Image (cartoon, rainbow, N blue to C red; front, top):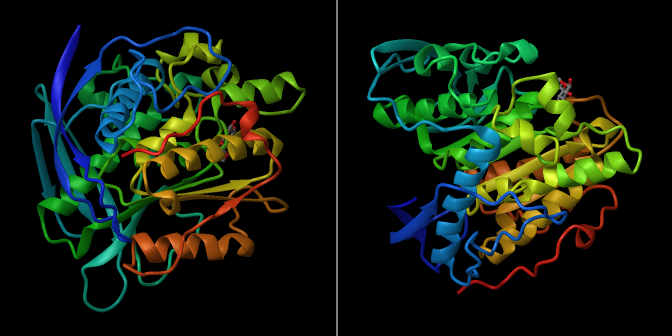
Length: 388
Ligand code: MCU
């Protein structure tokens, strides 16, 4: 069965930062069932599941919807829309109360604002930021664990999201957290909080980096994704993590991840055991963020999969290039530092993205592609098109 939705798409004119988009309506047909045929290569972002090639920006916008739906069906679980009733109180902290189907939950976020007059850009930090947030940018602290627990594999269905939608809801914890980010954006748009909702980034490190990556992909009001050391489940492509593991690396695989914690939907279990049957992979998760900003920060710890993240994010950069916004995504990998301790040699790359996407600056974010040697051509059998 198929259903049609109307959605906005980017016109061909892409202006410099911050992302200025002219939008018009396009009709997309989104499938409700997705392929699970064996494909050892990273799936082609620019071919619809029905075989139609993506040749225009408008089609790419529809293809993003299709990729998003496939990711939810096979990996993430359902990302629910805005609840029927939402109320907000306070401008910092903000308390958000959501009601759906007779159930109500509340959660609060704290906001540390710069001095002076706003409105200010902000970074939503899962737990606490592990990157240096400039003094000119507000920090919104989000207790993602309260929305969906991630203690261990026994955390399935626990947390406020599941109190609202039921413990059997298909969302993995990362999807539930993205729902929380979406509600924070509702709160920032609904009232004057001193934060400019058009200049909001999201960050988290490690397991919370997986979460920040997925929030940037699912919440299309986020201007800049800043996932840090997310590794497998974030910046790594599942297929490459598995092939690296097969080559003897001590890397986190999808089949390990589903036993360790509840970051992904139960829907993912069968695919995790055979990642080559997924209809998508994480180069396309990054592709969902386009044309918005994305700076992927990585480490060279074996468990995170430096080759898997680097090759995957090289494929993601190809997607951004075809989407006409090559400079809106970069990745910066560095070794020789502790997990989640941000090293000074990644500062310039982070600063460039924050300046451009959150501070209305004009500096360049071109060509930021740093990491260990990783040959992306080994993993792809498609050629990125130039879209019209
Ligand atoms: C990189 O994120 C995770 C990793 O996926 C887990 O296997 C490990 O247990 O914890 C990492 C983490 O969140 O470290 C803080």
